[in-house]
Length: 219
Ligand code: G3P
Image (cartoon, rainbow, N blue to C red; front, side):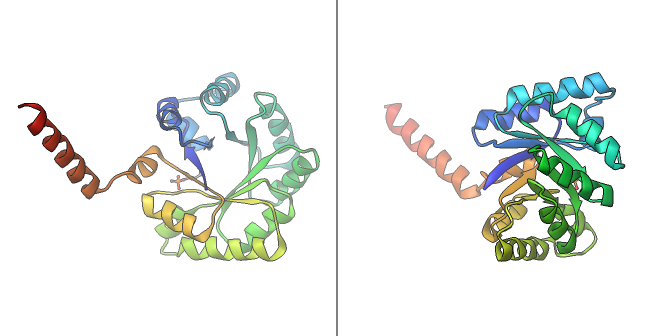
């Protein structure tokens, strides 16, 4: 399973990269705004800075909602780095843009996926990745993991190569359950990734090892 971090924070990206477990980064306009990044040049410079930290794919989202605008923005974004994946919303013009970029060999991430039907469309349009939002479905009392299972089944039935990128991950159980189902990628905040390593018995065990070592080595 590939691990992406869902943030535009250079500090968080660097921390995950330093752990040696990071395969890529996803961003969205809200995450860029959270870091105070605005204006075309600043946005592009920020994507470049992210690409310089991480070795893998970096999703950069278009703002346009019409086909021509998405194509124009996407073609500009991929000039920043070979690592850039154009993030496109699941709307009608977005599906058209996914097909356009796929035909040109430009990689895409179809975002804002909340149903199996949308996932099927993204795959048929040739998306490289598609991002079902787990946390936001759970927020409205809808079982997000059933959706991941359904998409896995549909993609396996027909051999679609579009990768399931489980997004809007909020906690470590989302990651573990997605790994059990067979999502190809998960993207989440640093807190969810770091939470995977926490176990009270690890902490108690380590304290005991260090205390025993110190006791005999003080003599
Ligand atoms: O980047 C898309 C997605 O991961 C957003 O997550 O937590 O804002 O629902 P969240």
